[in-house]
Each structure stands twice: as C-alpha cells, then as structure tokens.
Image (cartoon, rainbow, N blue to C red; front, side, top):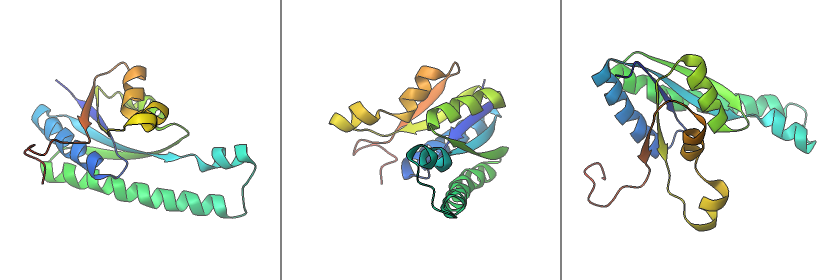
Length: 157
C-alpha cells in the first residue's frame, strides 16, 4: 500500500496524535516515515520589513532549529518504539504548506499524514488551514486527523 509517509509536525499535542496514528499505519503497511518541521524563514520576513538587528538572525535561527529538533525527536522516538524506519528533516520556508508539498515530491512520498485544527469565524476565513492548503497543492493522498475530538471519543482523556 504505502511505502513512504511524510509527517509534518508543529510540536502540538494535535500533531503528536496524528504522528502516533500515522506511525501505526506505517508499521501496518511496512512503510518508512519522514518527519518534517517547517521553520519560518525569518531572514526573508525581516529583510522585507527592513529590520535586521545585528546577531538577531543567527539567534532566531538557532532557537528555531533547537525547537524543530525537539519536535522531531518525538517523531523519531515514536517510530523507534514501533520499529518503523524514520528520518527527519528541518526545512525553512515562508509558507509551511509549500515546504510540505515540495518535500513530499522531492522525497518520493506516497502519503502525507497531518492534523488540522478547527478554527471558527473570521480566523477560519483569514488563516484557513495548512492541511487544506496542502490538499489543494499536492497530487498524493493526504490523511488528515481532526484536532478536535468529541467528548465520547475513545482517545479523549
């Protein structure tokens, strides 16, 4: 069925839940997984706004990389616990959805497993969802786990 599954993470509990389920699917299919975290490209943002204090760029980059590594450590540990082959990637990008799609294509992934959080009202209209944006741009299947569970869902604690 699936041979290589891409699993984006933002370090949230919702994301970790999707990763656990995705790794279980990978184990059942005999697939390998690639965990990905997309760091904001602060250099591009600050250059466009004309404000790059000396040393700030390196400090922000190091902090974001450390955070990314901690998020991806969860993916590595969950995969190791399940006996699933895993690699991780940290990518810089202005838009996470573009980086996810580009990485899926470059890595030859045949499935993306991710989460989608529920937003209401104006927030939903303006911000949308990374998962929705990925769905509209990628040619491979995307398995989306909802971030909100009903009160009687078995995984709800």
